[in-house]
Image (cartoon, rainbow, N blue to C red; front, side, top):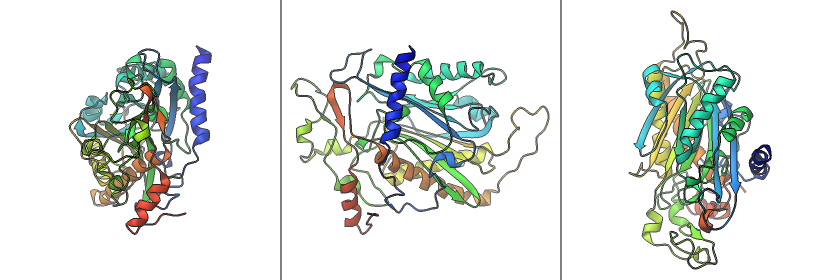
Length: 402
């Protein structure tokens, strides 16, 4: 088992080494606002992010064997060594998805532990492993744990029915979480995801406004190619090829794909550009002192960032967002009363704008950070080509940095 786990984690290390692709800020994509030093959710002091990335196998899908293209992402609001709950709230733009623990989050107003993000069929194992981790580290909330775990569907590239995410993978992500730069693209829960018809996955960004920081992490697996807009440029209408395809030489393989990869640059059908199955999970962190009611408003504004990219909350999409504040420590378990600081509603508008901007940029970073991936049944999903993105942006008077 140790060798197997080491092999899985090695793929995470390879992903880390390979992360040399430009981000939105490197290209000077005009998305507005002032990013934090890392342009990541970890710009909010205390926040730590961990991943386990699972990649193995090629060729035809054999349930239980692979190919495997999945993983798990975890976020510790105050770091893995601090179990003090944070004020939190959630919002759903479209509910064809899952985020556990939200009933108590809404009722009690506190997020009592780490957040997990994975694939649709692995929510249960991630939830249970978080409880196990809390028990092992003596961080179990009073009265028991109701972890928050969210999902998006990676069955196009991954043997999702094979249930390859195991408890040890979750524990490794929880223990390995850290501050600092955050991996993007084909990592963690985002490993097998598709965004606007390009390879998607994990992305992050941040904004500093009024002395406070807002950080966003997304797991993007949503939205149609036709609708893709970056900084107002209709990129999805400029890059209409490079759609998902079958890379197999077997003419009977990949019957669910629209085309073979040899035809990847041929003109698409309208239904291919309009395909928008999938979901997006968005986690928003801030150090601004906000109540759960105010955090609900912040979480709602993530919808506008999705909309600026061209997302519409389609019927088949699970668009579920969570916001938390690391301010006001030692509040949740006070025996009697607590003194807390609350930011005036008059100052919330700036945080709303920061949330919209950071959400939009995190989605862009998820696509820019991703690499072309071939998965189950030789289905291939292409990465967003930076050279053609440059051409599209320049065409509309928004040239990017060389």
